[in-house]
Amino acid sequence: MTVTQVEGIRRDKRARPCGFSLTELMAVVAILGLLAAIALPRTGSVRVNGNRAACHVNRSEIELQAMLWRRATGVWPVASLADVGADAAYFPEGVPVCPVDGSVYVLDASGEVVGHSH
Ligand SMILES: [Zn+2]
Image 1 (tube, rainbow, N blue to C red):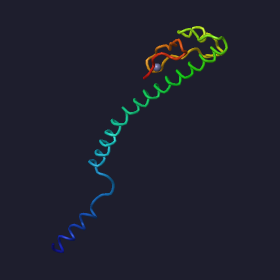
Image 2: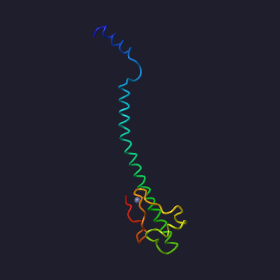
Image 3: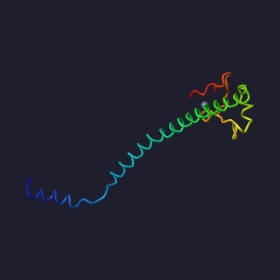
Image 4: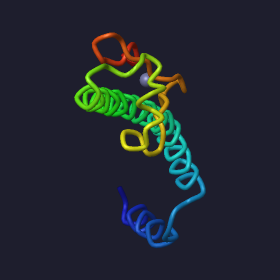
């Protein structure tokens, strides 16, 4: 490599502008778009998992209130929860519905919620 070539390389480095080129910026935007495409479906699954957890909490709450109802009255609530659900002492905001599928909760003969194993 000659002296002229070395000085040419140095001159090229000095002449290079600071900052990012359009190509570099486009590459960053493309990478961010790819990351967003990966992350957005995950937020959807977080919402589904949250609804499943809320359903589990609802089941536990209903079964607990059913036990309290049985302790106070001596019998389990009716399967449709019409009796215990109408009593504001047990469900002040009414009997919840499943946040996953919007269905109502039903009790079996032993005071446990039927289904909702999602
Ligand atoms: Zn459910």
